Length: 180
Image (cartoon, rainbow, N blue to C red):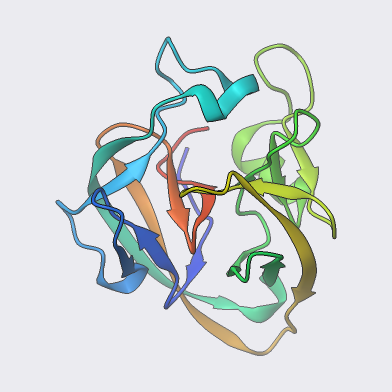
């Protein structure tokens, strides 16, 4: 399955050492912070108890995306992420495992159910919490702005990681790589 969700140019990705680099400047071989959710010891119900690790970027892709498929999500910690509506963000509560602007589009990419038969995805809305890197563990959504058709965005995706399947985009934990 190909990963087709995209982050806007200028989105800062957290590197292994905690510094950040714009996604359009990320290169193959860069080491980024991740969680390896496929690791046998990963506890998705208590993500704060898992160790963040570093992984090497294996592939980055660029694309131009129409604004009708793009939204900007603003958080109470000042973070803002502009991404395609199908892009999964890691929710902080048990009820919101992965959150995004267009659940149907995300289900087309990743399927509808989690391993336990429950819902994997829910729509992001004001008040929804997302998982962060750093000292704070979560931030709440304060605004969701859907952009209009006819505008275009220069966007990027980290499509392949050596291990792990998340990165931190403007401090917000989002999916990366080819599988969730």
